[in-house]
Length: 403
Image 1 (spheres, rainbow, N blue to C red):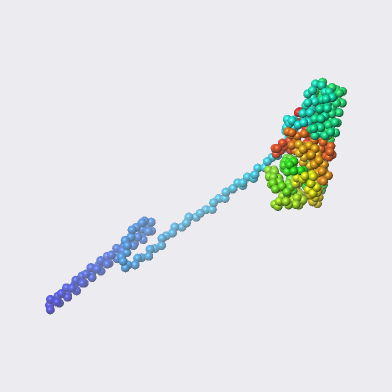
Image 2: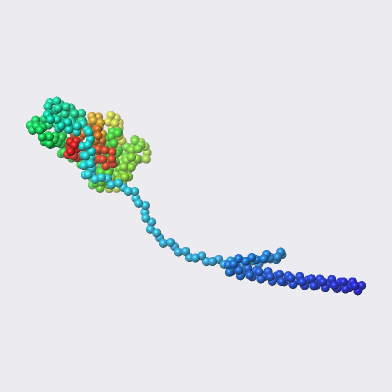
């Protein structure tokens, strides 16, 4: 049994030796892992990348210390920057009224109207006989001068030229100019009445006329004339039956910085819109309120009665100081019929003649003044925005004489 004893002793010895080796290896491995973890922590603080050996299975990894978060740098508030405002829309500067007539007179003298032709033909003949005078008078009548004024002018010229003769064309022209000027009548007051009846109220100008005479355009151009004279203006778009009229008028106003009172409802009561425009003029201390009315046929009694209503409603707020009738100078006798009817309804105080160039018959200036007993105050000689000017009798005569 001795051999069995020694075998057991040997097995135990081998087991003890193996256990010692295992413990030694395990302690060594543990020290290596601890050294690796320490190196990782030190490298993290230094900002280095370190490859760490993986932990052995069954071992619990150590929780890493939290990384140090660097403090955010202080941010200074930006300095305020001055922002330039958007430039306002540039307003147009209307041409001064006093300079307009010189330009328009040149255009009138270059036109080919019947009255100018008649006068030129008379001065171009060597001898004026009865046939020449008859032709001259007929031409005057067809130029819308009217029978009465045409006869007066012909007789006055025959009388003076029979005495002095026509040997001197310059003298004949002087006689002709003087007689024409008498017919146009420079003694009439052609200024717009812009003096309110009550202090603090605006002057109210009512603009009337039939469709197609350029009434709304004339209101816009008149606003430019008044702005050029440094007056404050409000526009009233009381032509509520024509959809584009209010928009057209507002566009005219915007170009010179003038506000337009209008209705957003098509077919609104024109008297109400006109009243609101005048009320705004009163509230704002405006110098002038221009009221554009709907174009009316002089043959339509109901429409003409409504125009009278517009005037009556306006005058509940402020008196109407001026009623301007816009006439197309090319309409001739039809224009005269319109003028008479309108004058009966709203008491016209002044005439605006449009299209007094090209084919226009300048004699209507004399005829309309004779018929209504009111002066032509403004004339239009073109399509430009500033082609409306106060009427100048002497300039008109010089223009049709080609001077």
